[in-house]
Length: 127
Image (cartoon, rainbow, N blue to C red; front, top):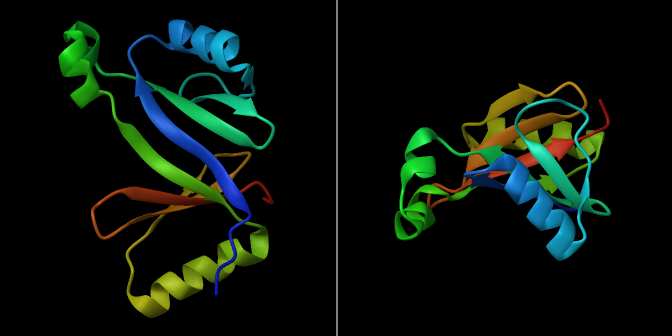
């Protein structure tokens, strides 16, 4: 059985990166914690983060009502240790569950879809 440690981050799309980073810092007290340039920018409270991704041009031009439909959660990420990261991939293969591996440099992730099509990420920083 896979053992997750905690929710690592929730990924959301934003229409204005600087404005959103400022809002999450000033309103919620989250700290900027991204070891890379570009998307995503991580705003964190301890080990729990919000990953901010830049919205597409349609979202930037949309009305506030339309933005709610275009600016969505991208994925839900759970942190796992290295052993459970490997175990998860083995289990997915045994179950016939399709997954995608990604090397983010400072982290490795696998992505799967839940029964409703939501993207679930398992990520480890033990690389």
